[in-house]
Image 1 (cartoon, rainbow, N blue to C red):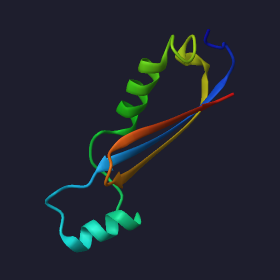
Image 2 (cartoon, rainbow, N blue to C red; image 1 turned 60 degrees about the horizontal axis):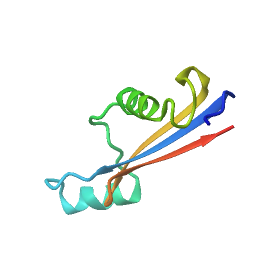
Image 3 (tube, rainbow, N blue to C red; image 1 turned 90 degrees about the vertical axis):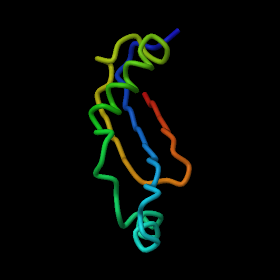
Length: 85
């Protein structure tokens, strides 16, 4: 049963590095020097994750009181989501 307490949500979004990027830019992406300023927007990532977890991890998304979202390039695209009470 999902809890009804205040929650903190941390989302790490690892986005695919563009195939068209030069070797220099790919190296900078791997080191975190170049960060993705492309879509998806953080607000769209947040809304998708919050909607997907509602009723599963918490009763209502109004319980989310603290949010951190990081977007970085990754060789293995994925979302890593942490909820804490």
